Length: 201
Picture 1 (cartoon, rainbow, N blue to C red):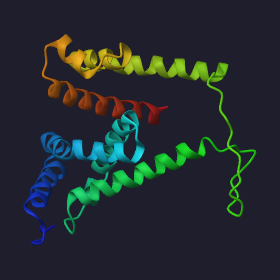
Picture 2: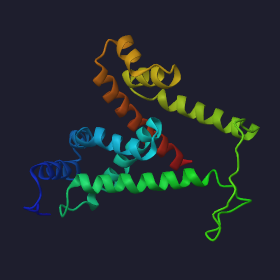
Picture 3: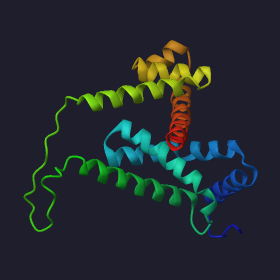
């Protein structure tokens, strides 16, 4: 595909990275694309969800979906526009599903009547839910064990011991920016590993 002359210098830079990623399977090109848009995409997700945890997960998902379909990208518009559209649509779907979880199936929403009831969910998990959560925890730990040692340590400190980014940086004597970047990479690896495991079941 020929790069459109109307693309900005930044858009042409991204297109060259995409070509390297697609044609040469260049992992550094993927990493550069992530570095270019990770923070801005995260803050867009944070603004839409108002949840740092959801924003982190949705950021990872957006990159995952974009990279999976990257061969479909055409230089008719900037990569950032294409990426943010994927992220936005994915986030809207997520928020819609999350909202629907709180609507009682016994009192479905009726467009003709705004007075619809919401089911108040109990904070106590049923035995089935407790079992499922336990199994998810076991699966997560088994996947974490397969990470490289430095990623494994970061994930254990952040999610199992619930350290803050600052505490991890102090514990490991690493710059705060390095901790955040490596944790983002670790989460991305975990997401792909869990997705592959789920698809194989």
